[in-house]
Image: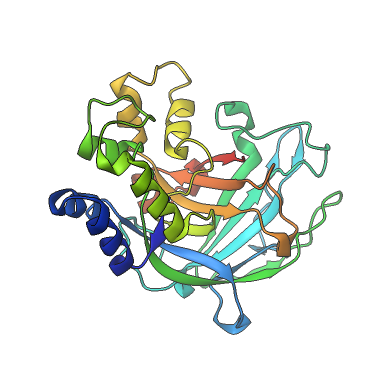
Amino acid sequence: MSHGSPDALRSLALRHLSPEDAEKWLGLLRPGVRLTAAADPDGRAGRLGGLPALPAGAEWPVWEGHGPLSFIASIDCASLPKVAWDIELPGAGTLLFFYFDGQLDDSDAVVLAEDRDSWAGARVLHVPAGEEVAERETPAGLEPYPVVPLAGRAEMTATEPWHPSVRAAFAPDAPLGNRYDHPVCSQEFLDALWELDGEVVHRIGGYARSVQNPVEIEIAEAVLGGRVSWDDPRLSEEVGGWVLLAQFDSEDAADMMWGDAGALYWLIRPEDLAGGRFERAVFTWQCS
């Protein structure tokens, strides 16, 4: 929900929470990298749009029965700011993000977390450093998005108080995904977090800035096949097994609009991230 400097977040917490609760809440913050349009193209951490640089033997990602995916973003892992990551992000190489955005079928087929058959409509590729690559032309029927260079800035991220990690710290018996009786759920605290920084942005790591309910719950529900209720402890346990890999906001400069000013999210299990198994990342999207 909120993102910024540790000092700003500490000051905010101490204004609205008891010292003990403030320290507990601050201990839940997670480091990430915010990506914004780069003023200096030589110092960028990646880009939105354009053409992907793929190894000679790599095939353009395709959703079988629907067609090729659109290229969304490229992230240069070595050029990201130095961060005390709590996830094992690759220190080098390039992450490439693809998504079936509806260009080929006027948005008839939709990629949804709850529809496993649609998961092939979003893909993450990691190209190791030093591998010979070349820009690949966009397949017929797709128009590439305009290029927007991205610069990275390290920051600390907070999440909604009804996110399972915060709920577990302050009200473990409260219903999943709902407010509960604690100052972290007070309107004053929520308003202060929003005023500090309530934007959905482009991000690597940290907490997702969800447009609706926490995206981790959405992914966990999908992985469990929608077979468990929100009061089932298995859902909370599954939520804890996923971390944000990347989120990409709607971006006017890149002609990207995800639904009604929504965002794209890729989440992954920490052990799959550490093992470089990016094909196991799961995608979802939200809009207002």
